[in-house]
Length: 173
Image 1 (tube, rainbow, N blue to C red):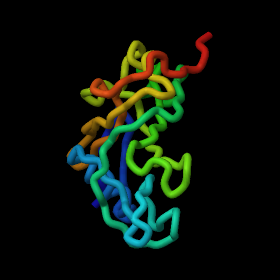
Image 2 (tube, rainbow, N blue to C red):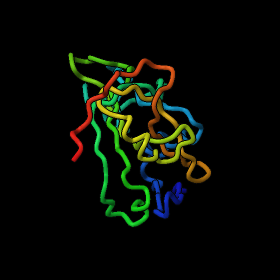
Image 3 (tube, one colour):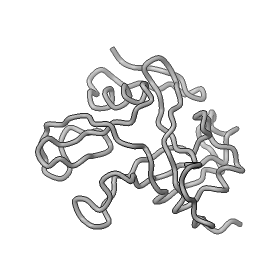
């Protein structure tokens, strides 16, 4: 049975034949962050997939992972094309380097997880919060409940972590 929900007026659906994403989002619905760990090389991978990107094996276990990391890159949407998101602009999309498995299997390799900048409640962050987040900001994962069995992972500033004095941000016009 597919998992379906509405988010900001947009229909979301994970089909029955998408087993990896069904499992990933089932963990998110429990407000837990799990990633696939290859049974052969023991490395974690993201996004969910059918074979390990490091050794091409197809056997995985789902393991809990701490949803904390550092902003690697970001984009800000000031002109939302999707009508449901227009009233939320500017909103921010992050690529976060997880603290887990840094520099493995080789130096400068990280697990990078994308998501929107959000409040602690999982709502899209308002402009004043967006302005605080940049490359180097420390983030933690939160979840936005969309429907029974479906929650979206998002990122909020980690209040317990040391934050950079001035995270790098693109110059503003």
